[in-house]
Image (cartoon, rainbow, N blue to C red):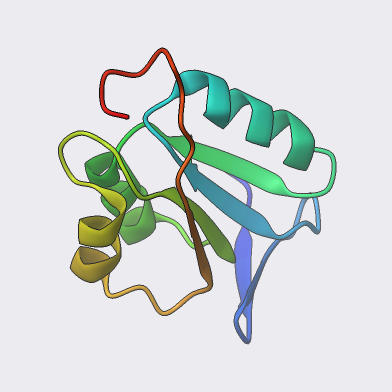
Length: 102
């Protein structure tokens, strides 16, 4: 596992020297598109729902969370309130014609 250092609010992977972003969205296509866009400049991890995100946030350090508001189970609002996030979080709502939750 790569060594992670905290520098103020910035988390830096010593191996890649890149900031870390957690993408949380129940839509696999949205996660994949965001990951492809960001992976050249950032270390990216993904979670398919709020509970997986909470588990990752409890185990790993991130600089930014991109969080879908509308998900089955633990939605984005509950995820933010449950974790009491103290790191930057961008909440978004993507409408997918394929998702039964939108």
